Length: 336
Ligand code: C5P
Image (cartoon, rainbow, N blue to C red; front, side):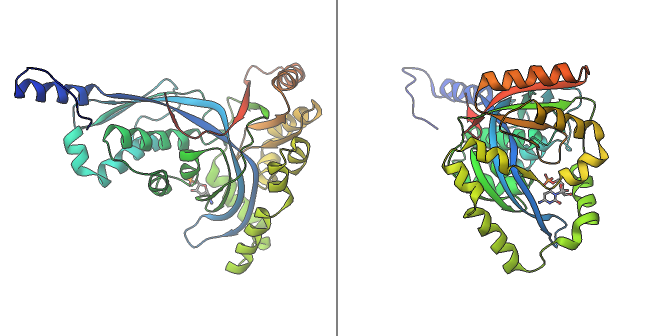
């Protein structure tokens, strides 16, 4: 705790002030969403997950998370979105529980927390909205409980919560392999813009998407470790990463890939149609993010993104279809 001067007041009063300050301490954080510029499924794993080769990219669209010491021994979760659970099924709740389990003496000293999520990222959308909130809780508690954990330490805690959490901690642009938790940050790509589109009455189950992919394409999986490693190093030295380091938006747009489209688009014709409309509307390239159902179009500028959004909105006049225009970002979780 930082040293401070109290002047001529009694010891018990000093202690009371320090304790009150701890109880009243609050951190506010921004938790950015991500899109997948590249998602290739290359194999399955003994732990039931899949071996992936991805390029992940943070975007400016983010949730705001407030973490406040509550002076009790409980974790309370509040959220303005009706579909976000407030209990142990929520990744933010699990993040706080994980910190309690890992650092019981800090929990005993500092007490529980109230976590308030101002949800701006669409839910169950393939944008890592839940994972980034969980990452923010890890960072927030690290500050609140004065733990001094490093980013890699927070990322390895994040692995226990979900495959995207380690990326969300640091954000930016990164190659992700393994389950998605092995990260190699690459050149930032924050000059481009993106239009996101999602039907608010549609969501895709991520386990369903991977399971169906395995049923249909499992025969194409690489089974040996050397093959998996060489596929991952091919991406590191390949044309996509080169296009990113050249900041070649046109090439990046052409190279977008997401294997999960092969199972999600046939099952959700509305999403397939949305992709087609966005593709026809222009931009650098159009793709589904994660297991969907969000479709995004990369753009050179904000005005191009706004024009594409307008064109797509006119082509599909469905009140359930929502759009967002935002910029790619080099940031992970930020304290504000
Ligand atoms: O790790 P996370 O909880 O985000 O994963 C959600 C689900 O997505 C997993 O339960 C699994 O079915 C699938 N998944 C996978 N392989 C990965 C990541 C996720 O099969 N690398």
